[in-house]
Image (cartoon, rainbow, N blue to C red):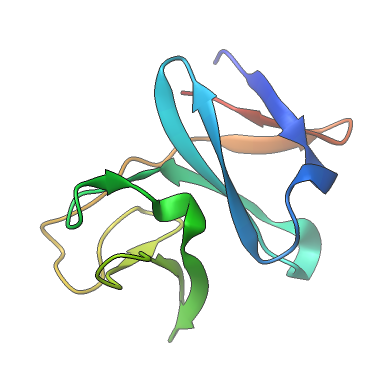
Length: 107
């Protein structure tokens, strides 16, 4: 895998997301407050047709940690990218890790 450093952990406030451009793809990065857990999914909302998911709110729906799109409020699972309102929709997920306080993504 070709890991690419995109930001420092402190660049992402806990329980929020940011957007990074990785190999020409917009990637939405999320940091959970609990344990500094990181997720990386595509930033493009297939329902709203815009690159906005990094601005969504993190939500816990049952056992699933997801992000609610700021456009039409569809929820996308941060682990699988599957839309919880319509399982036929999904966004890509990317491997992400923390190394020496740098957030790295494979895209």
